[in-house]
Image (cartoon, rainbow, N blue to C red; front, side):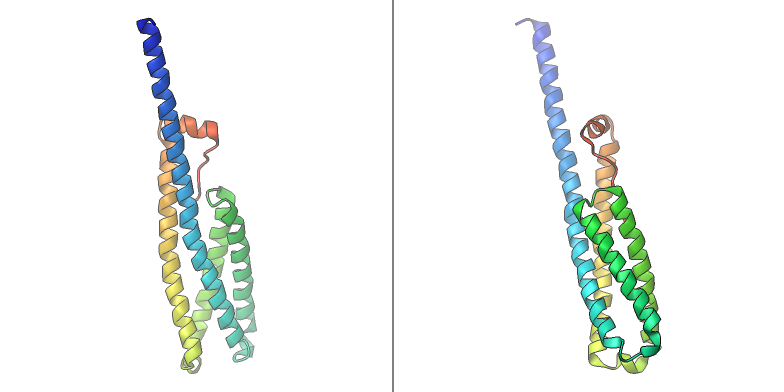
Length: 181
């Protein structure tokens, strides 16, 4: 074997191993987005359960606030539907963007409910309502942290897909930019 063919073969082997390593790194980072979304999704589900319980408990006690409750329930349903769509492909742009919008609407509706409860001190004195509100606040803090972890995973993945020469490989294999929340 000539020296030239050995050099060409060596370069081809190096490119092959680099391509395999880059592909595996992109897959690992994209899977990391899925794992981070799983933790976030868990907190979204917990929030949905506690919100439903709180609404069930408050509806009979505050019949004049049905519009607030309906708005929160609608926002909760929209957020759950958006989370369901994002669950399938947490690295895809559109489902995550829809979840971001639905989460913002839900957060605004939840803030209105919390403001309402601040002005209804006699309701907060009931142990079960106070416990649900405290649990909801805890879940919101945990959700915010899980969202931050998800956004960091997205940032690492996007950075890897934009670096040269990995960007070429990302384009060939369909590694598209992910959206943060």
